[in-house]
Image 1 (cartoon, rainbow, N blue to C red):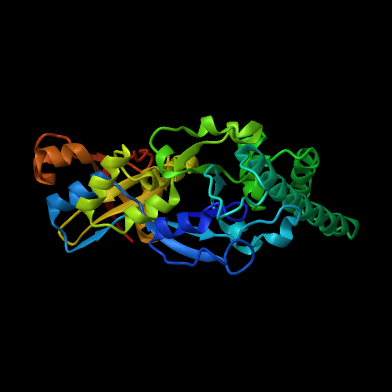
Image 2 (image 1 turned 180 degrees about the vertical axis):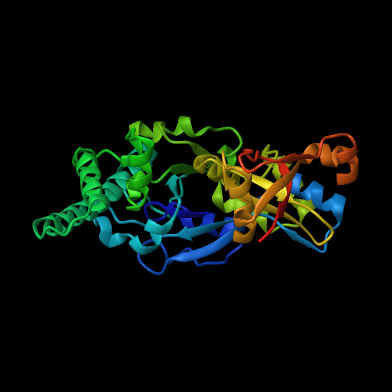
Length: 357
């Protein structure tokens, strides 16, 4: 799973990136231009920690999320200010908007206006998409004149012609209600305004525990998007403390957990992702799959051989395993069950796959 971190210059994107990924990228010269940063964040999951403590394995492997920090986007530059190669590959977008005052860091637009910032970035994504769709339709049209366009290419052309009016009306494609097959085909074009988006509102330290995203005037574009409030500088400071000091600092701020944990969970929710676990003395590990994934396909997340030679999955709920203390005890209580290929793996399942290749 990969997320692109976007925003106007000087909103705190790279500070957020450093906090999520434990990186140490410079924040002073990255406001506009420069290289793209890529880093990996571990997904916090108290359930996995408890399973680790139960099995005491030789290896402990949380799920991970990859974040791509894109340089600050300049208003009016469209695709020229976007790292399109990196952005097209991501699964979702984190739009960092600024809601903190700091006279030493002037806002790119001269004044705080999160709603305007969201609309500005949306427009840049739409313009980039419009350019891409226009070029693709032109190529498909030329192919058609030569009589070289297969049925699949004609379907692609029809789909692009369907979404073009929305782009011309400056409407992000994520708002469109498409048939499932059309939505799947559209994802193949990797259009930016069609990607799921999470708004991260970067606030001052005193507001992080008491404010909600809706209180910051996110405007029409932002009101429809899920949001999380963080204070990136203080979160970065907390992330570099020892665990016991972190708890004390969070308590002083009135927070039960780091805001960055909520950001990562919100990323999961945005893409409809869940986690299942594999356990044993060798390794306790979390695996990420789409909600609604069947057992055979879930096994494929571990290794393609499991999916190819799937026989059955042994499944137990993580909390039942923790309560009874062993897989053997779960089996005695009829809580460890055999499931077939069409069983939908649920968030928090502990699974062992039987297969033969």
